[in-house]
Image 1 (cartoon, rainbow over the protein chains, first blue to last red):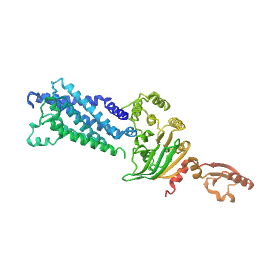
Image 2: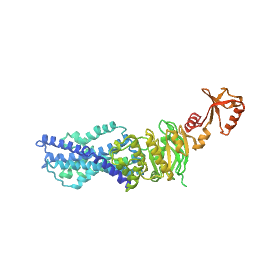
Image 3: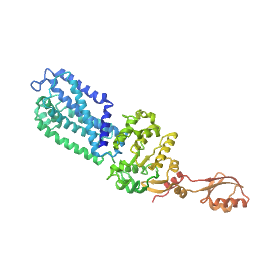
Image 4: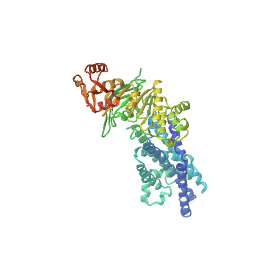
Length: 251
Length: 301
């Protein structure tokens, strides 16, 4: 497994060397959302009894940061390696597709968690936040991060150029994470959009994660986990199958 | 002894190109082997298949007895590849790059060998520079070092001297030659045929996905070579006894066929006997380039 460890180390080192861009920038963006939305809505919206809007916003922002950055890490690393051609450095050594998968997955999770933790720490300057069920927090962070890390690997391997990847990022990942209850509870939506939200797995990710903080959410966290876990499994298997087949990597 | 590289009936069909049409080839351990052919002949495809970067459509490929797909771990451990493209990872320094590459092969403390590689390739003072800041020739050296971190018994160099200055070319070859003397098998593709002629014991020529010539370098030179005698005579007319050898004229010089150097003495004696003087004389020796062109323009069927 020493090959795996090296690849994981390299993938972490890669974003660690440009920390300002890979962790600093998304933390700042989240902070801006927090400042603007809490300024506008703090006195007008109370989603859960006894929870300030700013506090309500925090878990959503953290989860959005984890998801977006997990996706960004694996996808951008792969597309850069493919386009510059240095992907051969990891294709020539005796690394199995499983080692390859785990290294990219875990590095993406580390990046997502680093940004998420950054958002949490910075947010604590603006609001107090309780963490009632740390295990739920961890479970949803891991499961949801894995789903988006896998999507990042798939997109990074599928994309032929940066433009393909930007399309996925801007037209799928961004709307999906923005419209899944980061800024609001689905109970504030019309019945039609409430119903639609129940078919959106990202809604369950954010809601379950938020339940871990406040002990209350729009749906039961066990239901949330039951919805998210099949996606974890499906995307992991799909990614493993793609890597095993050598699709777009070994012609 | 295990054959270093063994190809049997290797075919590769891409959607639009039939790149390899049945390659059979054995490369012995310790050989310095050249793979020659025009662009599009399939050289890089063949190397990619050895390296596991491309999968053969049919046939089998073994490196040191290990099948490149079934026993891919051992096969890849036995192989070092210097890719044709000048690729590098912009995030890392030369030493970091080499340490990472060692780690991928399961080598955790490889600094002694890395230092030796850096010294031998003239990279010692660049070890802590980012690879992206190096010149093209220096980047090429890093690629060579990367291919050698795990001391592979078989080393494949795909056009290693393309766009590389003379000095580096010579120091690179000196180093590769040393590795060969130490027992490494070297497989080389190059556009510089004089390099292949000077370095390689055996040559395979590829054309349109087939091996069209495979022999020891000196045999290819001898067989393909038309040795020629160029003569300028006084008076400038070709005597009857040389008419059958005439291949053409180059200005005032006659180009004569001379398959056997032994004939030279007879020709000179006959000329002297006929009272014909020699103003200028030279021998034309075939080089690999000539053989190559002859084979490439010949029929492949």
